[in-house]
Image (cartoon, rainbow, N blue to C red; front, side, top):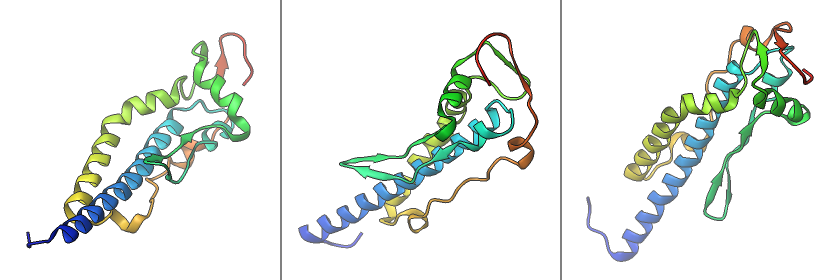
Length: 158
């Protein structure tokens, strides 16, 4: 490493910290996309409305926090919540707790991605991919489309 005065060292540290924050933004967005992709595969399938309502927002900063929101809903929010929480439904395709189960299944992969990208950015002083937020591969059309394939054991609308 080259010799630096205090101002140069401060500038280099600021550059590396900024790169690490941008890397974390990228990694969090990619991680949320990985989780939503997995959750779409696990979500109950009727006509595809629920699976198609999955979303991930671009990262935004609120103070010192980086926020990435992911979930299901929009116009189908009440339906998404009910399908997620109602464990008495018997789904021929998909499952209750589809989002929570996807988080549990992908947690280690996402944590490792965040750590790897942040470490690389701190070491190099450069954020990955120029700040882009690429989506991981989406589920296949056959996963996303289909006929009504769930039945209720009791109660609720679907």
